[in-house]
Length: 125
Image (cartoon, rainbow, N blue to C red; front, side, top):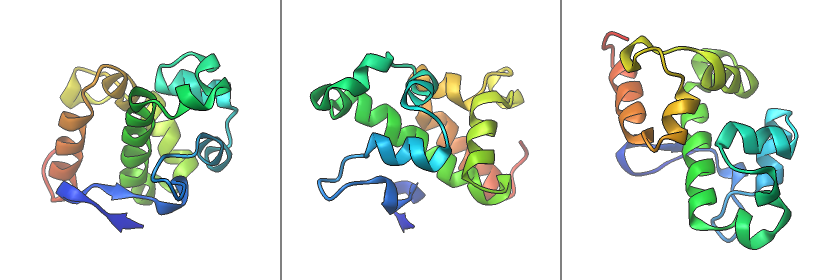
């Protein structure tokens, strides 16, 4: 793992040599189909049928945020697949019961990362 700005954790194996997230790698590592991954990210499954769409800034931004958040919680969740399950289903009281998935889909990954940093440093959930 490498650590980026603001303590963002990135799992290098998700990224290609061009610095973009390789969608197939993410789906394989999480044990989901590309259609399931698209649903988790809040994009249409057809997005992954064309390289230009999969590599578009919006798609790459959304998948990068998801990967970063899942990587942050994977140690205490028991692994990447468990972290993805948490990401998709665990209601977060600090966000009115919304899941991490719904927050990222609504463009609120920044506040979620800040909250995870707060919890990681001993703050109350």
